[in-house]
Image (cartoon, rainbow, N blue to C red; front, side, top):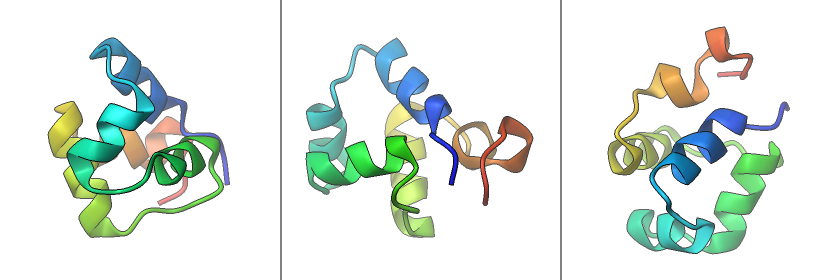
Length: 70
């Protein structure tokens, strides 16, 4: 699974730490780290929650056109 640089970039653009994102979506910091590294595929529910917090669409953060697997 490729590294999710779109998620990391969106998070950093909002000046949000991995810990703050984790708190906002109700998961551990380790979960966010694993998603960004490409070691973990989040559920659709978690993906949508992350997108809502970051103000991005599913395609922008997790879509195939961005080099990510869906």
